[in-house]
Amino acid sequence: MIKVSLRALAACFEGAVPAVIATAAADGTPNVTFLSKVRCVDDERIALSNQFFSKTTRNLAENPRACVLLIDPHTYDEWRLTVAYERTEHHGRIFEQLREDVDTVATYHHMEDVFLLRAADVYRVLHVGMVRKGRDRVEGRAGAPAAERLSELIARLSRCTDLDTIVGATVDGLADVLGYEHCLLMLLDEDRRRLYTMASRGFGDEGVGSEVPVGEGIIGMAAARATTLRIGNLRQMTKYGNVVRRSYEQSGEIGPGREIPLPGLDEPQSRIAVPMLALGQLTGVLVAESTHSAAFGEVDEATLSIVATVIANAIEVERARENGEGATAAPPSPAPATDASTPPTLVRFFTVDGSTFLDGDYLIKGVAGRIMWSLLRQYTREQRVAFTNREIRLDPTLELPDFRDNLDSRLILLKRRLDERHAPIRIEKTGRGQFRLHVDTALRLDEVVS
Amino acid sequence: MFAPETTAFVEAGPALIVGTVGADGAPHATRGWGLTVLDRGTGEIRLLLDADDDQARANLVETGAIAITATDVPTLRSMQMKGTCTEVAPATDLDMERSARYRDAFFTDIEAIERTPRELPERLAPTALSACTVRVGELFDQTPGPAAGTPMQRAGPH
Image (cartoon, each protein chain N blue to C red):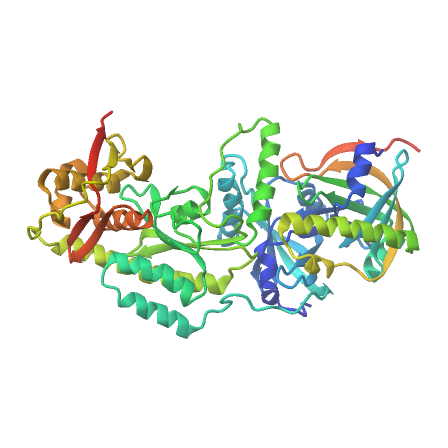
């Protein structure tokens, strides 16, 4: 009979502190090993991943009993579970949940082809007992964001009139209203292959324009699967993944690979990546990080999913509106004179990928880079500073896709990137579908054709 | 049985987890709080356990079967020792001193590597210890990965 609800041990199942499992062979020989993560299935069951057909698995085939030790990462309460093996699953909800855990490690360390979940073993919990009481629980950040605070953030977002303010209000609101001090808003690009950062809060560098390929790392995988991923033990997971990877390398199954430098905190311990979906389509990913282990729980997952859905729909509405009713012509507006005594800013543009540099410093690439180049050429040629989205959209040199060009997103990305770099070139939105270029320097344009 | 390097590894302050089994075949998991190799040749070791863990002690008296996995906190290099417990006795002053040194090394690693405040894992430590003498018969590489469980050393007849 279970005296303590498994739900009460929720933090233990975040994997922040490795669990322990003891089994015994039919001849009575015990086996004891660490587990990277235990999943809570329901009030009476847990599930463990099986990747290696280990001694634990073989023992359970002979003797279905096991004993599991769990630690609450917040209090260090230690619990002992007496469990009985019930069944093995090779598909279904439980299998998919465990597969997410395994795939997260695999994708983080480029072991997707070899580090695979073979089965999900489900155990009935016969008894839960406390081994040792830790410290009293200390309520951290939001913990359980109150409905009022969520309502306040939604209200802020609903008052935004354009994409630029939506993304700014999102990261500011997540930090100021809900307490997610380190967060990131990434949008899906036109090719649906990469995510690019539109805004962030709480990191050393805002990182506007930084990219993550869809399918790579925790963020990329959340996008690829359109599923929220939550990791509460990044240090432990990194260490575990590195060791497993070395083991595969020694066995010759995979060659040495590269590490993906994940954007964010220097030493994150927890990360949650929530897909932003509207009309069944992925728009982007909302990410929050923390230096605390197991910082994000189910309440955070639910809260951020609501916010992500609101943002995704707002962005889609804004895009549809922007695509449908942009202004047709910009009012004539001559460029103001620039200070001729200062040396000109060198703008170097690479046609191959749109990479753009200001005085040797990388600024942006891709569509945003090509937009920048187009604007500056018109500025230097015609002294133009007023533009409309519609005329930009018709510029064939931008190589925009015919469908879902996300031009407004790219313009906002460019604007935010210029602001972040304190560049002498800025973009100011002057009305719906209209914007103005501010250039506070003389320019020298250099196009590198390849 | 225990090469010098192996001895140094298990005595250095790795995480120690312990499996025992009762006469009814039910396994039981607990933690170790210090390990000393008494005889490298025969594989005899002295393992310190929570004196309040009645089930572990009862299992060791009943069946003697024991498995101990030692895991280096920084690298996760792991080794499993399997053998038979020949004696369970109250911890001596020397055992308590050894356990204090072990805990210091273990908690220092956790704090340095996991950034976990030391006072948290310290709460896991028992207040009273019992000492088990174990004759280790087999050693297994338990480092995470596909090779986990590979035998390292099996004791000869003795």
